[in-house]
Image (cartoon, rainbow, N blue to C red; front, side):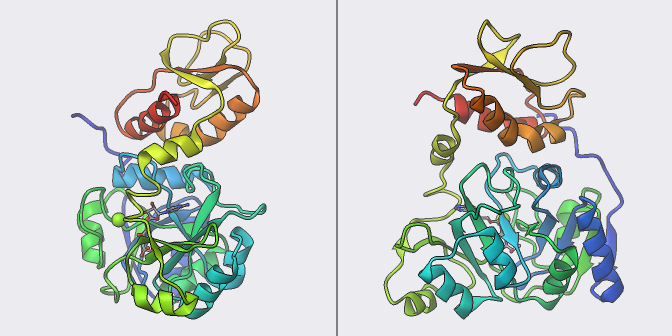
Length: 326
Ligand code: TXA
Ligand code: MG
């Protein structure tokens, strides 16, 4: 398959000192991509509140689908602005933050994490990492920072700056090099959504330590990448009320229209993912535009054909799930 590479850029190697941390935070605030150390693995960081910045993560990693990402924060107080913590979530945060634990909780009404970083879900994954350099970057960035492991999709997670470079040199703006990471496996992910905490992914905090704090066994939900947030379930979470008709030439009477690329004429009830045909821009708009069109109450949303290369593969993956019979 012939996939064009994301726009190539010079990847700066930054020292993990005050100047490097300040530069990393400035790049993040400007929508850039920075690999930063955490105690688990290096994260490929971007401003979680910006759909465009988050789309850059998927492009750089060549991730084939829009999994929801973890948003990183400097402390519990800022995390509680993003999500609703029940008694279990609060106890776990107090016991293990900062540290290798991610909590999936209902998003708060004031949650600023973008739809794309949440993959359109009503919940949000939050983590307060223990690494001092990550902490300093998060403080200086002043907003939630999305960061999956800093490796190309399908490869092993990066635990050193050299691993990051091997996968992502020329695709990201900078790497903050703080030496090898301590934990080396990703954070444990626990969902606290309905009173029965579920283990979504085993990781840096052992299960027994978590069960000790909550005083009960965790419900096991398998790996977070597969079980509860399996692509199929994601689709049904996300599926709009309207029917979705893909690869359309133009809307038929009464249909809403989701366009892509330059269009010859105007359509009623329409939005264009990217008039210039930029797949990264289209990815950033996808979830929000689908929601807006759905709110218009038409029976069907017709969607223009989206090219299958680059981020188009992921966009089409999500669109096919939205269009799947249900
Ligand atoms: O240690 C880590 O957690 C590293 C470092 C960089 O912090 N980050 C990391 O992120 O592993 P990522 O994006 O690769 O892991 C995200 C996982 C996925 O398995 C995803 O399914 C799950 O978190 N996840 C995120 N949001 C979720 C949500 N709302 N509901 C359920 N699972 C969620
Ligand atoms: Mg990973």
